Length: 139
Length: 247
Image 1 (tube, rainbow over the protein chains, first blue to last red):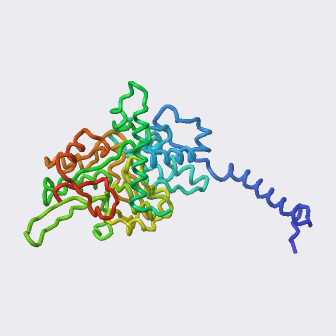
Image 2 (tube, rainbow over the protein chains, first blue to last red):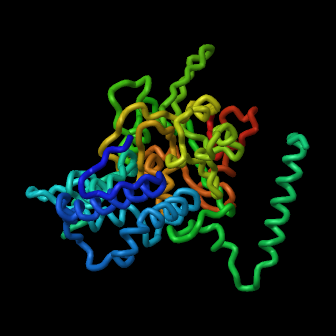
Image 3 (tube, rainbow over the protein chains, first blue to last red):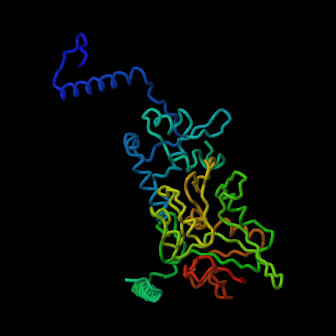
């Protein structure tokens, strides 16, 4: 037997009750997200402009990366716009000693957003998470 | 249809004949030399090339492991001081003729076969042969089953058992995947020689010669024409891209 809450109209038909529950959860999620969870603060990038507009990169960056990964791996075409190494070159930030911080460190470029969206990154169990060398990437 | 050696030979002949016909049919003014030049890193690998190595065993010095060190440095092959399981892309093999006592020392790495057994047995397509003959592992789709390690007659592949950190940008490697000599594909794509070849030349030994096996001129072609060479386990019919002289 369903409990009856004061102020909430009781709905007896099961699909309608389910729909109401979903709507309530969505409303809570929307209002809660802005109040309780801080949006990630993305560290500034080095380059002047990203290879694609920001809105497209936010949604489709993995499509670009996956396409280029196959091109580079199987065909050997490496001089493409969307390389993971290119992302890291621009977006890795440095600590007080001038050492690069991994993009997988807490709050850094990749990890900051991926923690916020609760999507695990698997790239960096194999790929380098810092630019190739300090010398070749002077600020 | 069975894939008998005879059938394969006929198919190869027809394939080469059609390639030859295609080359002859090129427009006037197009130089064939351009076709065998190394590709830029914005061009796909082409079957017009087949990258290979010649190991001159007479020049390879016993006790020298410059090629192995260069490989470790180039690809960041960090281990855990466990020689049984640490990754090893090239190893030096010392042979002694029991009858005469004659000693030989030679490097053995992935032989970049034309008919690679590792590719035959791979269940996911992670083990593959690039158009220009380089045999690679696509670690994105490798599931770590290690069939390829069992199939390889040269013991050329390694499995990464433990978490890896500090990888090189050009040489990604991680736990749960198989890896092996890439012939320094990232360098070849930028018109550079493999790291082991550069190191061997730097030591003054010159025991390793890199080049295009399809070419008829150049250092590799010259070295191959100058003296007989052989493939390791040529009885298997794998047509290796790495050849040995003085063995």
